[in-house]
Image (cartoon, rainbow, N blue to C red):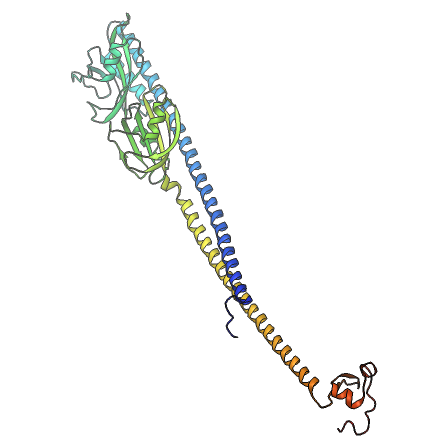
Length: 401
């Protein structure tokens, strides 16, 4: 087929088809991409919300467990302090009886590393690992100075310290022992290893980069456990993301946030809770990378489906374009053929009409269908007499002429 001139109908047709197909392809794929993006966005939000709920439940569970443990320990210390006060008021302390009593209470408190009693000068006199005459002095400890200075204080939770008997990092719960007149006579303290609670919750899976941390109101780290098996005990180190600090400093008893840890720079969805009756707070975090593992699989699958959809739409558009192009070409060729036939017919009719020879046509039934002027002159026909009627005779000798 000859090339179509610029601006011809076929050229305009192809131009319109390309524009429409291009816009249709772009809009269809844009719609698919938008739906995929919205779906993935909502899916990610769902995964993060699930992580937030999971950390809230874990934090609440741990806070209740630690609070209950501290109450039980406090009750044991209260009982031993009363027994010590009773013996003091009777004039003397029976070391053998008091040690046996302490050991009995200690067996009921699995979280305690030891229970010990000191005198008013801060020397440990009875309890776990205390050897008579050892003269271990705790008068410089924060819990001792506070209980000695403040008669109204009944329970003190100490800062983390390195135990002078065990050599382990512990924090202590201490209750005062007082004479009958209320003067300070010493104290009873229970020691808890810093890793005790992290070990207790080790069976709770929080993902490869999940964490559980205990810290105080001054944002000093007490103990930190990672769910990849590591335990970070950089006791006293600075702790707390800006989001966490903001909520704790605002006096919130609990909260959930997403932020990066200043210790390992891992982004986590975390929930914190204050442990009532103590200066302690706990925070449980699930790493964003861990919580979004399944979401990333969805992203890969969605991108694969989206790429397949785009490929199918592109191929479909190409096939449609080819079909339209072939159809348009066929229509153009048919139009050209019809024009040629019309021209040839018109030429033939002109030749017949102007011919000096008599020319006429009739069908299979002998009915005259067309003739020229030479036929009219030769046969003397008239259109009203001959058209549509059988031609029975022709004047003699006229046909031969």
